[in-house]
Amino acid sequence: MATVTCTLGTVVLITLLLWTNARVLRNSVHELKQKLEFVSRDGDTTHVLTRHKHNGAFRKSGGQWPRSRDGNVYVPCVIDDGYSSVAKAAFMMGFVLFHLSTCIRFVSRTNETDFLHIQPSNGCRSVVGRQGGPQLLGLKFPECFELGTIHHELLHALGFHHEHNRWDRDQYVRVLWRNIHQRDKREFKRRLSLNERTPYDYSSIMHYSRLVGSKNGLPTMTAVQDGVEFGTSSSMSPTDVERVNKVYCS
Image (tube, rainbow, N blue to C red; front, side, top):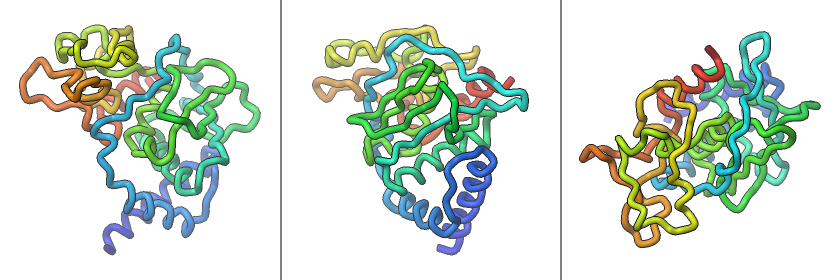
């Protein structure tokens, strides 16, 4: 218990430092620690293993968020007041990995024209890339609040498509069209995506699991190579981080 408390305390301090420096929402150490402990106790779910089908990343791809002179990419955000303090704490945890491993900084909006409006939704959804103006990133609480789902939708907002939509995906997964709901087939179309010459990543947080979109309980995708698992990650993979850095930070 002492180790867990110490670890949570470290996360709290890092989170507060990052959000303070980036003009983001502020919480007291004591209040935030309680929230993170609550999320830690209640966040041991398996939702991320089946990866929620999200329903908003199929409009035309947008552009990239601009890089500032200091080398960071500041993405202004408005977190809707309809979320509880616990939900807002989960967002903060989702932002931390980006702040620690990339040049992306999710910051509180002041007067920026282009920004993410994070608000309650009937599912997990984001458009792809910077669209211009207020941009919806919708997350239903609590279904869409696993760390991996937050990372997944934030990566969409940064311009990244699903891993299994890659143009070369047929070398790595077989799409079983006969098992897919008609309404979901568009989620399995191949697309030009920001792979940055990185290898296909079964562990990407952007990869759907084998049953997503199934109309009959049978797999919608299988790996070309026997025994390979996919769609089970709980946060961004090293390759996900590498791609963000190549697109935005190099």
